[in-house]
Image (tube, rainbow, N blue to C red; front, side):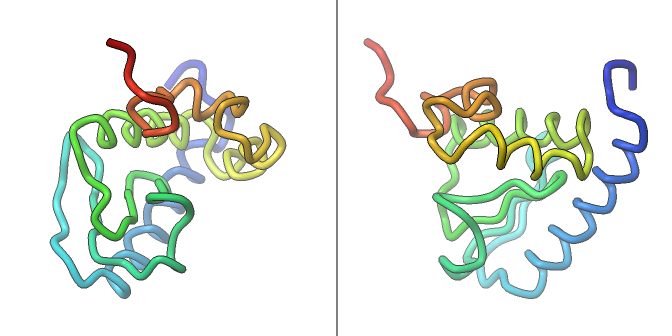
Length: 119
């Protein structure tokens, strides 16, 4: 895992365990696996941010699932793998405006639904 922070693997696995437990306890919808990403549907709106949240390799959402969203969330999963538990701190300091947040930009603003697709 070159290019990853020391201990990032532990943080990624820990975050995945937390996301899996959170999703398992609160999900009332289907649980699916898409290219290494666990998708937990049917969570209450208070259980995640914006349209959904990626925690480790778990995507927690009410029902905000599309091929574009899954592409976007897989990038967030890779960010978790790269930074481990430092990701939430780095994300916080990157700012809450997704149009300026480097992690959202890297994941794709169009795929994340933050900007309209160009024609």
